[in-house]
Image 1: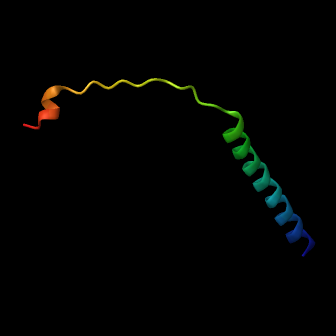
Image 2: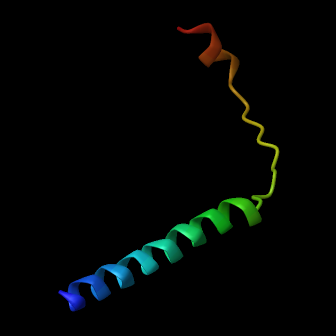
Image 3: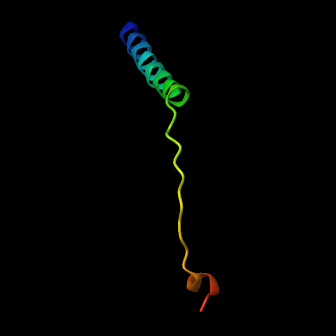
Length: 48
């Protein structure tokens, strides 16, 4: 039984590290803002 508890504690610790890493990525990393321009041909707007 002690090995099962130790195993579960290690799994919880690893899950906490992964969860903390995801939180850190969402808080600390900002994606660059880019302007996107898409030209639509007039023929596509008229709808055959």
